[in-house]
Image (cartoon, rainbow over all chains, first blue to last red; front, side, top):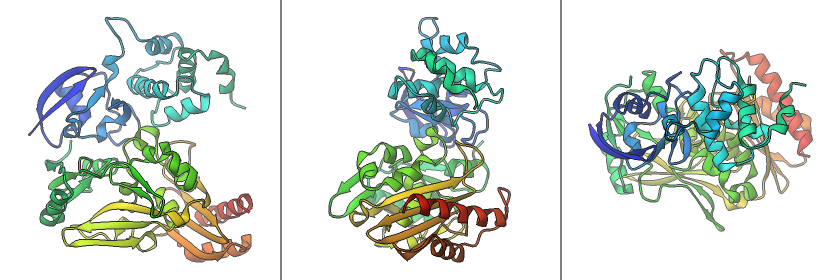
Length: 162
Length: 271
């Protein structure tokens, strides 16, 4: 076991963790933050995406011990005081949630995208979620939600297939 | 569930080299973890000790020296390369290849050094490094050595690295700055995917270099072609150098066909 100290959604935690524990399992099983999902466990699907010092990572491929001294943000940090974030509201409004399993990862990926690119193009949104799979295949609504929250719903026309 | 292992995060280079000297035969180096942790989870690798090199002093990011060139250090991620203006200005081929590697969040973690040390035939960074004449600076407690990437790969997932050694710096020589380059990677989807074949072409001062991934046990470099080489001469030289196989991703014949197609297209585009 190794003692680690980190912040998750701005709250400080100190815990003993096994060296072979992934950050994903640490969040879900040690901290009870089960919003972050495990899909493939191999970096293909992006369901476990969280922000790690402000950048998206697949938390299934990060060891909890690597998070010592770092800042982690998860889907639980989106809503404040019981109120959904603007991004969550846009996902709801555009029906960007079907089964919901990919949604936490999609929100974290698009959150980071909006941090670095406040008005992303359709191509930039697609690149931003290239590592997040939606098996209900509702990508169009997800891209629309991100266009709406960044005040660019007029670009929706670019989404049609030729 | 991952098997039990010990974890070390040395802060100094000497501490790291001592750990590798003592435990190299059962240790694995952890940088981005995007290959290592998948291999551990799948049971393909069972290290007794995982050595995280990201906290070693002086191992972070990229460095630029006008005389020597660009240094890529062990913690330099693929997205670090993409965000660096000096890379885009001097070595655009590095950025083109980096852009095609995996997905955005993997590029936030995966390192350039990890990509080449993993030594997969489908490495996306190897074609750029081969075309640019980059070299690997390798260190161990026994001393240091320098190896050109054209000599670095020895087989599928095999390199010249001994078990107590670490690739601690990639140097892209200043003499390669200004090289024009392009990369074409055949994949099933326009996003996160492994390459079926990849072709990189680089031109500078009358020289032409072509590198191919997923076409032999190691990434392949065709050097020494004159800048005046015709499209047919370039195709002939590349096809003579590759030896693709049929596998789960496609047949040998399709690989050969697409390698030729990409060489022809890139030669036309980069006249």
